[in-house]
Length: 150
Image (cartoon, rainbow, N blue to C red; front, side, top):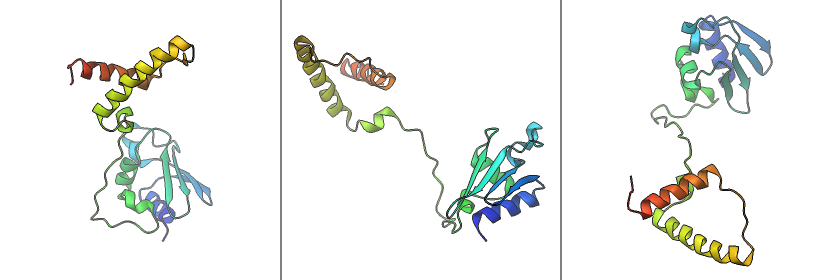
């Protein structure tokens, strides 16, 4: 049984109404039935190469939809992973992830500021505004250099 079929069987057993055929199905999402929105076909299930894709347009997390169906994330794959391996959710990347060692980065910022002053005197500096991440990073570097580290 493929992952796609596994999800369709679970939706059928949960009594969810489905619509569509082939590799794309719309269904009632069991993840938010308590919100009274179960009549809408807000769940998209599609067949991918060796897995099933799952997306709720009402905003339910895939984990919550699968839990309501009695399934796990591993069940979205034709060859499920070993259930003894714990799932570790991804976190949002931070601009700090790109920096590595903060001391090295502070040295780079200070060198850049020195180079930029030289560059500005020669008229070669790019006057583009700093991105929000750069502004946040520079503020943090300034705090750390001033000894106000969090």
